[in-house]
Image (cartoon, rainbow, N blue to C red; front, side, top):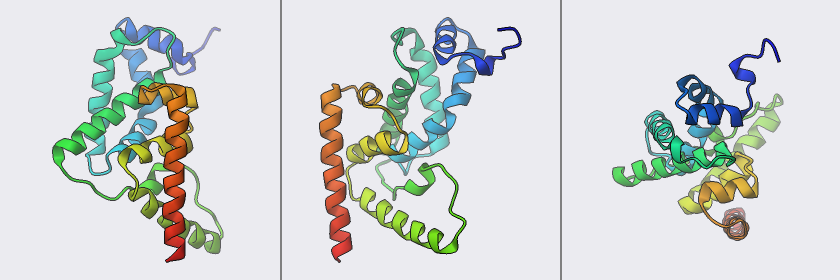
Length: 186
């Protein structure tokens, strides 16, 4: 199509171009996935310097592009790189901070003040419950419910079989429900 700009190119084409060394194509992929990468880093390692994690993850992705499987989906591959970088940074720093779950969730805030107060209270309860989960449980829940990855994309990002994704997500959701029930009872 005449007049199509680089922003209109299909992602698969951008990945192919970037694999061939096209820095502009990779820059477009970075632009498209910057927000997602930041959100993944925030969930995987809330105490890490998010800008540094994301920048380093994109550098690692650029360097690893020659090993990217043709036909694979870019988004889960990038999520795995970002999550690994974030966990590595958090592990080396040796500290954990509270998960800023609400800031990882996009969307407009409600207009009605009563709805806003209820949403804030519910969000705080959910953040507190998520903070009690392991990093692995937080990540699998975030991949599915915050970042809306399919089970196949989650399997790629976590480097596990699709059936494993289902069982991990089920167990993580069970643990989250248990924590929420405990908090509601207290």
